[in-house]
Image (cartoon, rainbow, N blue to C red; front, side, top):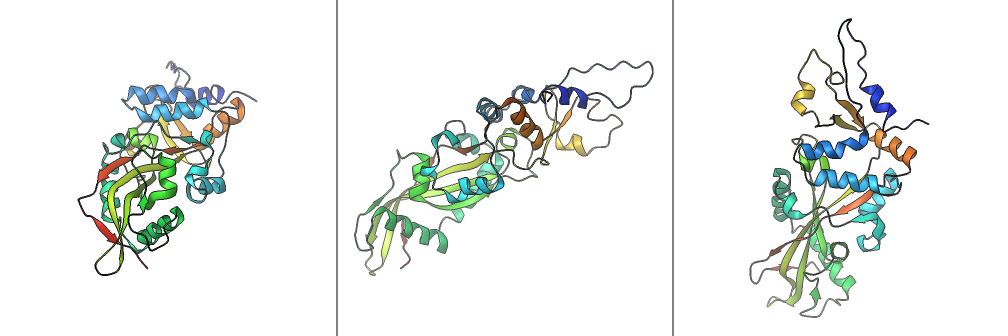
Amino acid sequence: MSDPDKSIYSTTLTPKSIQEGKKVSIEAFQLSDIPAAMRNMGWKIAPKLMEHWFSRDAFEMTERSKIDYINTIPANELPSRLCETNLVKMAWVQSFPAGKQAISKLLAQRFTQNSLSLLRKRLMTAGWDGNKENFPLGFTNIGVRYFESTCQIQSVSIGSPSDTINDFYGAIGRATLKLGVTGYTKIGRDGYWYFVIHRYGIYLKDSYDFVGDSQFLGYWSKKRTMTKAEMITPSSISAEDMGFVKVHNGDFNQYRSFHKKGGDFIIFSDIAWLTAPPNTAIRLPT
């Protein structure tokens, strides 16, 4: 079996035809050149995440296991070796339009019938008997995985295929932004139970994987990726002749099969804390 990080990409870059008298010389592109190309474009987090994938022992998610890791298995029960909690920061997420838009949407939709029902469920799971004041939920020095399993009540999607190709697009693409709360229970003068909110915690959760061989990941060279405008603008010179390689998920899966390196993983960002206005209380469903 030939090394996919060398022979495949060298062959891809060979022009289909070379006119007589024209000499073309292109340095062979390797899949592992992509992080350096990302840094050359000024990206910060995308190359770190990809290098983390390259450094890990071979591990491949399936469509089924990906759903389980993201939606089914409690976050605090996931194997620690599967989770990356240090590279993605919410300050970085908020620096992009996609991040700002998703946070605004999440806060606007933080209290729905479903999220309040989930909040009551979180309280009951924590030990609240439905008839006790000042029962606390959550604290600010909580780990993000435990926070998700005990305090998270709402989520929205973040990112779109139509977004500008930038560091966020290369690192995350599409993911889930989640919100949890900390506070305590209180009975109101009306006889109903309320939850007094101290803080909102917002974080990002995603899977870094290459499920689905055919998914297109762009045209890459040793220096950069082609912009969307370049990919749709007609040109007499092909992307390959300009030194770009068409990359798909399958190329990473082939790399993993050959090198026995390349491990899919789950991303958790840190938590961005927002202090609620004094005496912010939301009525709990019965």
